[in-house]
Length: 620
Image (tube, rainbow, N blue to C red; front, side):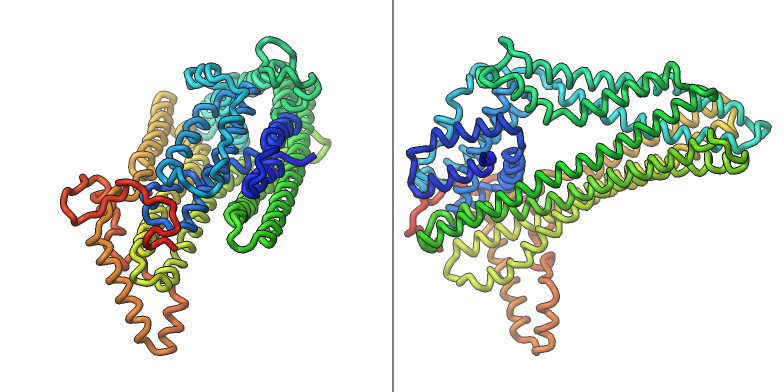
């Protein structure tokens, strides 16, 4: 059976070819496939198109060429189609957390359609909402929207974050206890330090199984709720068999259910019974080693599944691209399928890029699982019949390795997010690098096209500034996190070893306060400003004229250069910051916040879009 993505793009090709006879059955197949496989490839494509939707700015509409309008029209319609399909699927499965967001995105798509032009000749008869939403009860959707913001997804996310902090303390406290075991008991307040480090143990121990069981119970309840037939199920869910409903839920939750049930049970045993320096404690260590091996197996299993899904999606998109190319060959270069082809090629490029980031995260998980298992085995080897000196050394080395690997794992995960932001900035800079060619190739008489390029360049530069802010923000948080996590053991040991009890508590409280203050300070000073990406709502002709002059001067200097200088200039990117003074953020903000003038100095952007007509002046 075809995947949801294949059915979706088959439907689009049918619409572009003017064949509307089978659209209802195609959509029925699409929903049936989503219910059957829960493959998530519609969600993957939705993420691609939502990212493009976020980049749409109506300010550019009046200056778009006919070709660009048709391409944007195609992207908006595909986005709305996928949103409605995913919305219906989630309503039928009573997944409430995304419904309000999807409805807001659908409203944005429709609003952009109205602003772009409702008389577009592209896909004029394509109105998927009328039949896509036929099974969605409007009152039910509104009830979902009115629900409180506290959702099971948010609760699970909070528990997962809390569990990550607990795991850090598990390895951090093991490192501290090992360090204290090296220090003589007569050294300052070593006994006091040993007593203080054990204070959180009962609470973190209870959390070790309580969090896992709580998260397990939520996911198990949701699995049972959507599996057992009853009045709480939607009509579409009730039409499926028990086995189909179970497989759908199991595909979503299997890794979490397996992990939480096994780790929760093992931690419960280690908390109440398998503890201490007796044979029971040794058995607890052996159980933990087994669980770490289980984590390693799950990490490799997850990588294999994600890789299989990626290759399937890649193959599907490549097949759709070939189908589009054949349609273009049959219908000629003016075929409407070329807009669909451009969207598919963008999706394929984005899929490959996202896989690179996802692959880094999966590799990190596998490496961390393997190395942590090995380090813990080294730390717990002393229960074997080996020499006392070797036993003590292995315990210290293992504890240090476990803590160091946890630090590296957390740092690498933060580094991946930073790498994503830097890559996004590079993509924008590469797009800006094509601007000079486009500007030079556009005749001066084509004023609308030149104004569009000017606004595109201005928007791209603003996005570059925003991505730079994101990079600085994430870098600051990453450095702060690494420093704090690395210094926690040394701060704890310094305070508890060399200071009296009351003063040591005050000092550690001050350190915690400083950590909170630095987090608030970074959020206050370096939080990325979303408004910087927005273009001003009025067009400044004076700035545009100055921009044209700056570009003319740069091109004149380039044309007057010697061949050697010409080659050197071609190798260097254009100095965008010197092209025009409006790139200064303060000027951008000033332009954005200024009121609409009454004179002829500025040309209003949003006084009505030009119709999508071949004869529109300046449209190529």
